[in-house]
Image (cartoon, rainbow, N blue to C red; front, side):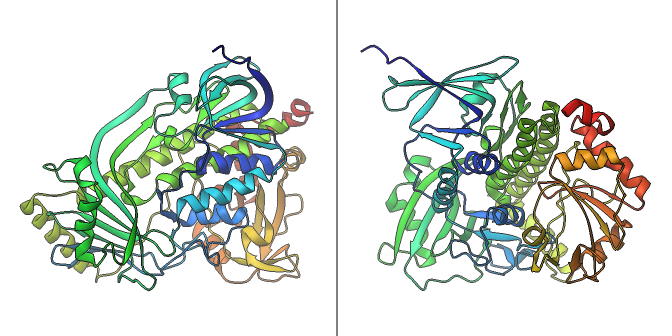
Length: 533
């Protein structure tokens, strides 16, 4: 049968891949009124669990969409420590997962990915400028100086075809990315491979495990035991070198592995039994002309740090404000260069960190495991069994001032009062570009050309302090006071993705930092008015 003639449509941004990364980006752009076509090869959301954990930064991102992970029943936080134990169930490591992070949210949350995807998709489809095409697969990709042409065909038969003309295209289409392959973007592969059996279970109501989240470093079978979202649990078992990956995933073998934990077919439902190969790799380039990649299309990491999906959602958040400003004409296309440099380095950190954790966990030699146990127990005892906390990970080189304290890090946030609302800063004040003075008069702190550039980007200059009568924002705790004292600064520049662009002790330093930040985005402030008018 002859193929049907292709129909054509135009859009601001085409996104290939409607997983959490692609959907989030579509929402962010759609909320700004940008036309988006979101293309997904599968007709329905995959209804089996995959990612189950997210960090405080993703909770902060979701809060910007109106989802409060502390009160929403689709998420849970156990406010417990995370334990690593040896075969004798002695503590090897304790990680603080019960405290609030400096960004104002708990360190770790648990959720069910199909539910989150469905919720995000509902948000995306409610936006009038977002078009979702499910059941369509990309088959061709070409670009010129003015845009990108994406050819798609229906996944089922390949007979129906469409052509999408977009100003920009984002490939968020997973590990086997069509977009990455079409662009010829090479992968850097660390040669790290481990097979693990993932079992997702819905136990009978009332099932509990204490601790709720822990790692068993038993050389006979390294095992991860964590929540899988409200009402769910996950077990991850390392597939041993002598075992067959297909055989071990069969339900009868899965139940056999679960039996020692009191989980049987009589008291639980096995939602998924699948072997996954954990890998460590990333694309050497994330940009090609008007096309870019994000999420698993750009990087793959072992799940030991729980950062795979989190890294992808950070990619989407970093792309959202850049693409929106570029389409508005308030930032030049070169602003995308810092997306690649910042996010690639950040993802590489977590890839290496995840691999380092895996090399500790995936030890199956008894003598090597005994040496590991002795070393880790000694280290834990030396610090008085105190739990460790996560480090603040800086972005790679980009639109932030590397020589100022806290720049390139996720900004902390305290509770404030602004316009009669008491909440975390993001919810009380909002998000976007901010230039903020701590207990300082902020009138005239920017040059006129800088003020104009900030205004064009929808940014604001605000003051914060203890006295609500004297400042735009009233601090309700000592969070910002303590942070400013630690950094030795009186001013800071906050980006739309919640990262600190710069801190400064004086107005002169602030202005210099402002110029540096926007120069990294390709914007020369004193020429911006003429260039962007």
